[in-house]
Image (cartoon, rainbow, N blue to C red; front, side, top):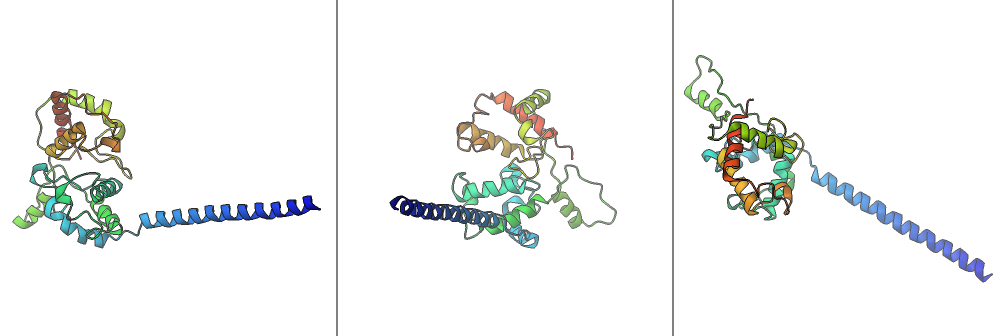
Length: 240
């Protein structure tokens, strides 16, 4: 009798434990789904264009960058990469004083980040100035010129730079240096040399972590000449 009573209650207890465990799992799955949904809000391109008007103060009307690379080109960068960097700015994992007034939850809520990065990703810039049609005004020509980025050729051994790129950079940044869509890998070609050099030096000094890895030493053993050669190759590799 006692054994049957104990077995029955043990059975009930097991059911309760199973129910609680499964309910907890379901709840956790639902919560995770809510988080995923929150992380992927509906993109509003019109809102993205509006937000970009603020970004244009430094990065240009067409996200072409400015001041010879003090402010980098953003146009065409993967939205996922830009979202990651904005998150780093917000959390101070990547320090950038000019971004502090803008990269915060009050000025740039997470939902808005999706819209502005999608808008900027969709901007396409040319590397060569097109032939102007007859009758275009000076202003119209200026608008077209703003949508062209042609990186000045950098001194260095282009062949050596290409070999370095293929060995150390190609696997992530793509064979043409234009990055990979839907990824956290940005393009390198078509980016200002001044900006690229600044970031390489930041990686070398650990002021910024390459590939988000504090233990990564990709640039630690690069000589100044190797960096110069790599930049020389990147300065002429943009053939779009």
